[in-house]
Amino acid sequence: MAFPFWSFTILCLLFLLQTHEASSAVRPRNRGHHRLRPGPTRTMIRANKTSCDLFVGGWVRDDTYPMYQYSACPIIDPEFNCQMYGRPDTDYLKFRWKPADCELPRFNGLYFLMKMRGKALMFVGDSLGRNQWESLICMISAAVPRSPTQMIRGDPLSTFKFLDYGLSVSFYRAPYLVDIDAVQGKRVLKLDDISKNSNAWTSVDVLSFNTGHWWSHKGSLQGWDYMESGGTLYEDMDRLVALARGLRTWARWVENNVDPIRTRVFFQSISPSHYNPTEWKAGAAIKSCYGETVPMTGTTSYPGAYPEQMRVVEAVMTNMTFPAHLLDITLLSAMRKDAHPSIYSGDLSPEQRANPDRSADCSHWCLPGLPDTWNQLFYTSLFFPRL
Image (cartoon, rainbow, N blue to C red; front, top):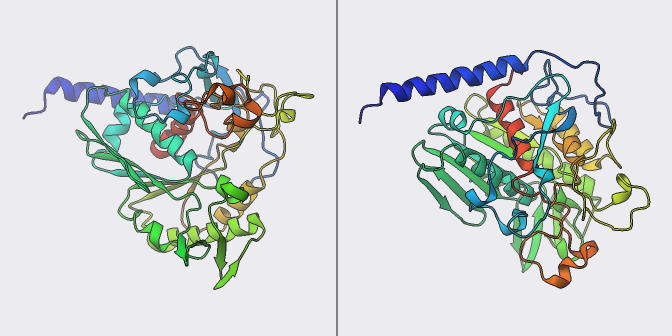
């Protein structure tokens, strides 16, 4: 069927509008404002670290947000679907990330589809990666609500397809990135091996990785029985050392197997949790994020202890020769104590909801919510690298 001239004209206008937004964003402004800065001095180049640092700024109220409604995006998992499961407040949906020295281009789902036509994008990591994957699907879908789609759910791989555009957006569950093997009924975390997981990552045009939270889990939450490194089995080791070894294995795989001309690689920094209210409120009685409804304001340094895992991530990525891009969402997310599911994470019992200190989820994030900003930064880094 012939492509109508008026449709071509509309697409051209959309492209010009987006280009204008990007060019206007490079104009520095507000250089006198206080900047939110992380604890350590950065030695590596983060994604889009040019005239504007996208990851330094503050949260401003914007009543045009959120970018989609939960009721229009049925793929949201119950644990992220806060409004569906009774969260009574909505102010947390009305905040936009504002870099200190520029404006982010607004996310344009149709532009994303046109730029990514015929391509494959994959998030690889833990449930925070799934959080971001579902967010991106909702954001794109809001632009083309009647466009045919297909969801293929599986474990470890799930894929959502925008059929008219030939775009697949996938999530591959690999919470440690490196492999876990079953050996004589025991789960062995292979710090030096990534070959099984990585089979699914080839022939992908854009890869976005994350890991972090699972490396610190202990007891019943621990995902392995032994670690293996250098041919030796360990019942345990310093978790930061283990993370560093696993990330170096990931970095070697990227450098030896990914073509930088064909594939863009991103690494999403550590997503913070908010189980310690003393980081933002002295003398807090509740030991969770329950009841928080607005972001932190007036903060000029990282609230609480800067995550040691981020120092490991930075050290590994600094030594990479492959141009992998760090999406440094840690600091801006640390301000969003209000954006977690808390007790509105799925169908909790009345008893569970009555005891937020034990049942509140202050690790994941509501959808719509903060992961939409992660994806706006991802979108900017992917399509407007000169910003």
